Length: 303
Ligand SMILES: Cc1cc2nc3c(=O)[nH]c(=O)nc-3n(C[C@H](O)[C@H](O)[C@H](O)COP(=O)(O)OP(=O)(O)OC[C@H]3O[C@@H](n4cnc5c(N)ncnc54)[C@H](O)[C@@H]3O)c2cc1C
Image 1 (cartoon, helix red, strand yellow):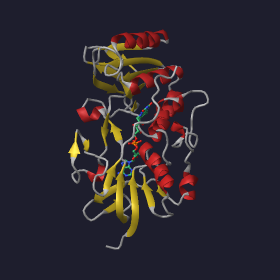
Image 2: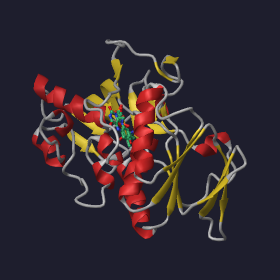
Image 3: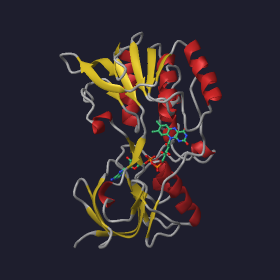
Image 4: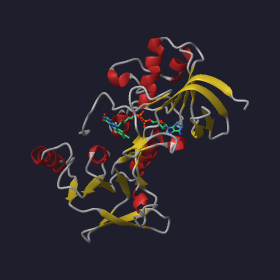
């Protein structure tokens, strides 16, 4: 095979990708030794900003302001940082095929590379209501949030429907943060989730009750103990109503769904040992490491 040889390849230009690049530089990687392939069009950034300051109506956060590693007080690694440190950052470059036996990866554009060591940092993607075959889940105006282009779509639509209504599906981190941001953007918000209260895996009923009271004080309607069973749409295919399991229906201009995430195994699926839906990892997995990263800062709500 006539493929370029790369010493280290990192697939995934998210939070773990950006922080891993910093570690490579600290350890003294030589120019041209490390190549990063990312599906996204922008250099690694602090993803948590997308459900917070990125959605603020006034002075929102925008790139290049929050490239990694500013979330931990580190240097802001804009695209020039990668060039200055001799790292080949391939953006808009999804890896579509991989063979961990022959140690090759192929981009969606059809370019194949051989590698010496591979780091997989492909992160997660959101769970989509279409995965559960929820009727109407393909309607326009139903949003999920993972990458900066998702956030851009949401920002555009929040402006279009200012003064209108939104339904937030989910009472976890994303649901709670998005409800706050929509309200800050002068949108009337109803939250719907099946749990007995906000963030049941993290909050006690007392803590949840405090936050729910606070949200209600900001005009947010909270419907608990039921789920979305279907969406209705207009002639243009845009969402108009959310149908709930308890028989209620909610008119809406926009829906944001935050019901969890699932590991993105991509072209490596079936080639590595899996556990709980993701790749099984340890510190030194043969010639290959799988990275994931919990962002160093946890924040909550946006009010
Ligand atoms: C909106 C939002 C808010 C969050 N807020 C917080 C918070 O406040 N605190 C907190 O601790 N955590 C938060 N998180 C979680 C945190 O962002 C993740 O834990 C972190 O991003 C995981 O980093 P990662 O590098 O493993 O994955 P990601 O950051 O998801 O990066 C994976 C990257 O790989 C790319 N990729 C995937 N497949 C391929 C492929 N085949 N080829 C090339 N590239 C590929 C993706 O496009 C992406 O760029 C939030 C997440 C989201 C979505």
